[in-house]
Amino acid sequence: MQRSVPRRPLRFSTQTLLLQLSVVILVVLFSAAVHAWLTYDRVGSEAENQALTLARTVASDASVRADVLAISQQPGTPPPSQLAAGPLMEAAEAARTRTGALFVVITDETGLRLAHPDPERLGEKVSTDPSEALAGREVTTRNTGTLGPSAGAKVPVYAPDGTTVVGEVSVGYSMETVGQSVARDIGPVALTAAGALLAGVLGSFLLRRRLTRLTLGLEPEEISTLVHDQVAVLQGVDDGVVGVSADGRITVFNAAAQRLLDLPDLAGSRWEDAPVPDQVKSLTRAGSNSPEALELVAGGRVLVANARKALHRREDLGWVVMLRDRTELQQLTRQLDAVGTMSTALRAQRHEFANQLHTIAGFMSIGQHQQAREYLARLAATGPLKFPVDQAELLQDPYLQAFVGAKGVEADERGVALRIGPETLVRGQVAETQDVTTVLGNLIDNAVNAAVAGSATDRWVELEVLDEPDDDGGTLHIVVADSGDGLAEGTDPEAIFAEGFSTASGPLARNGSGGQGFGLALARQLARRRGGDVRVLESGSPGGPGAVFMATLPGTTAGTAGRTSTGTAGKDTHA
Image (cartoon, rainbow, N blue to C red; front, side, top):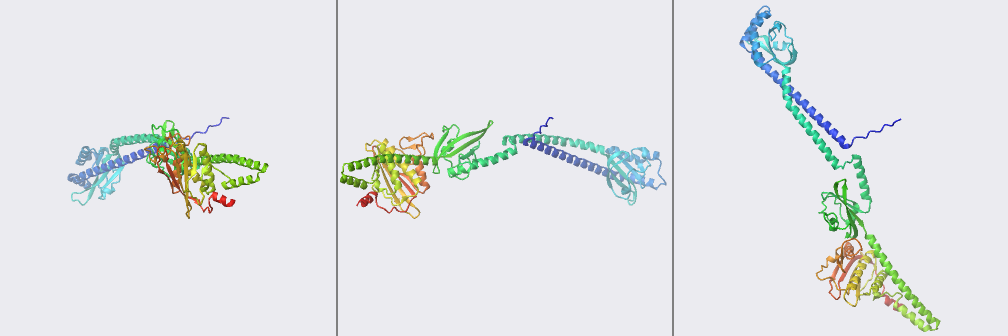
């Protein structure tokens, strides 16, 4: 048994077109019918008025009134042959011929015809009721008599004294003539209706075409599904999505984009006028040499941005800009680097401890107990850890000790001496370790790179750290100087905080790889987000000393260390 294939429903645009055409046709036909009816009624009323005027004229003729009175006073009605040759017949036919009326009929007071276009009807009673006119009232009528349908009027005929009704005059115009007049007048109406119908059909087709183009040929159900899917996807992903239409307006600015760029919803605003970083805008500019993806710092975050052209068949829909957050990855990478550096330092310390234990074991094996005790005392006085950082004992916070010590090992491997300045004093403990690591690590790395690239033979980096206690959390002040050649001549101190700028090699190509050129920019944004700042105190000079940077980090320390320096503690313990 062959199964019937269900018929595919008409497309929404086709349904809309058919509905519009139906409405247009109905409106045009209804308007034409109403206009035709009004025209017909108007022409019929004009025929009635014309008949009434003619009937009044004939009924008011003095000779007609006298002749009708004379016949009414006779005992009976004259024969048709006499009436046909009489003056009433002559007057009625003259009026009918002159005006083109269908009939002009004159009757006596009983309704018998005294004048009629058809002589055979003379002497007979009229086919329509004459009582209204014989009662002295003028009436207009539309009815069908012996000569066919007509629009006419009935007027009483008074005796010469003007007080007695002695007959009536009935005048009619053929409705066929009225119909011809209507047909003649309805021609322009029909042409207008046809023009309106054609314009409606053309407008419907144009509207269907525009609707199809605006909806990309999608059905309402498909559009509804797409809207639900768009909301679910755009609001459910962690990546920022910015949609830019072909005319340069932002159509999509999801919650993730607002969060990553620290901006309100910009949907509806112009893309070029939006407060979006210019690096992101450059991805969508025609003829731009921007790479496929780029890294930038925005809102205290390291973002990766890329843009794709949106096309539907051959139609240009605009751009889709994607924003991905790499801040946590950058922080994890930096923390991993710090852990790796510290593990390297600990391996070196383990090797040093092994040598010290071997030395003590050698003293004990040869019986030099006094020398072994003196050696242990010296070890206790200098502390168990020995990072290559001058005056490291000024840092009482264990976190700063470990982190700066690891950085000292890393700098020492590159031939740079890391030292702590004599003004260093940290009484509290670091509470916001992640922000401090990012800012302090970037400044130290930047200074080590500058020292290595500098022309001075004595390569060094000096760090001074001072905390300022506060009820809401202490402020950490960091000053970093180096032995490098300073900033290049003519370099704007503010320019080095732009993304993609390296103090070692100047502006870098923003290729989104390598991670260079973002340290200072990220450090400044993190500091400013906390209400602090990172700035250049001195630009330095060729041959050294190099540039001096200062960072202010409010709310990054808590409590008071409450202890003396490590070296002093060691001496007291030893005493």
